[in-house]
Length: 551
Image (cartoon, rainbow, N blue to C red; front, side):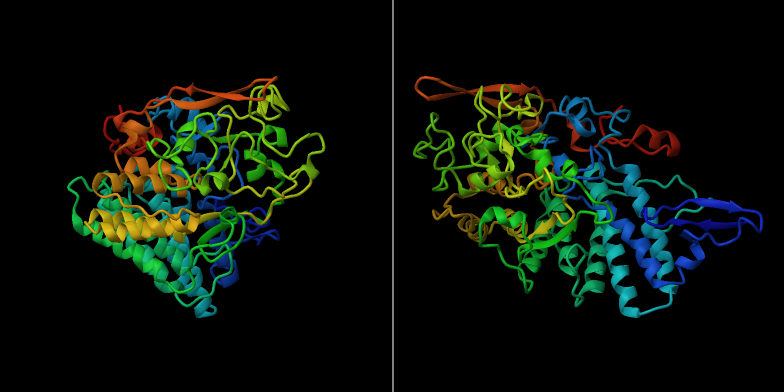
């Protein structure tokens, strides 16, 4: 009996074992490729590899698909709120009800192992495929990275996992035990280094894996490894490795902090972006799957599906760099959005913030967002079903000139890593090594780029809080906060606070607005939630050990 792996043309690659017992079935199909033909043609092997790119998050929203860890991570932390319960975030994670039986909408276990299986198939066959050696090396480097990335996501969510390095067959023993977190992290680190080596010197087009991205994800990995969740003894050697890895990326040629309009960093191709995932051009993504439709205020015909919390808004300091709680900050509760950190205006749409192009919204009477009660963007205004319940919307990643009434979004990108993150990684590692002056220098570079001219002077625990605050505001809505509060072991504080909204009331006679801050959603976080539970189906199938505290 012969086994063929079919690749369905035009729909992406999918593998299925099909038994063939007759000459009729043994004929080569006209609309697909056999396993045998794929591994005799380097371009077909590359097409197989291209499907593994789907393990990467994308800026095109995938309707609650948990593998797309882009916007979805925001409401799973204290920085965001999702009114539509995509992937069960509100009803399961935010309520502290996560268990081995109900994490399926959010967990990535089976999806990532699907991509790992395909990567293992590819890596086991690619060296025998005839063709150009440089092309083979490039594709092999990409798939090596993608497998490492899939494992990095898994260990970030679950801790140690089974390390599957060869493709499963029908005769395989599927009861592979979990490796330790440190063993998995070393494997991922080594694979990222190998990918970087294979891709060094190759000028990759936008949207393809490159050597710098492999080193940047290695920096992120080693920062996680050194953090309290995985380094309770505070081993300085781990922080040294994290520091070296971050500085290595910072010193790469061709990377520079973006010094233009800060908001454009996330909508234009520029020298700060180390790696990106383009939207899949195989499909004509319409506006209903795009970042603007998902996040614009309802008055601009958006859905405000992912909205900033009041806690995130409060995390942004003042224009001079002081926190709003500082006695000399000048923060005015009656004008809460005045004179704030310049990044606040680039990241957050608040009441009164000009948003979209009015030419595309002829039913609007103003270019300003109006979140106050009775305003066009409130629950008493246009399309009340889609109003933002926090009374804020995300500005980051939004193209405010975009006409989602008519345009499609086929070339948008999700940033997989950027130089600003490497500065923050380096500052944190240097602080933990006792090099506070170096940590302040790199924090000040980030703040200066944002337009804050007053340098930081804090030291000790106050400087550590500044480091964490800088990550919170600089990297908001980029998928970092969810993991940061867990690796720092502070999620039992940050995720046990209620999600808050602001209710803005405008006096019709005087025009004066008042601001009331209310609980929008109670949230709960338990000690077991630092890691996701191993799915019950996987436990039943393999007898795999569960993560601590889960029943």
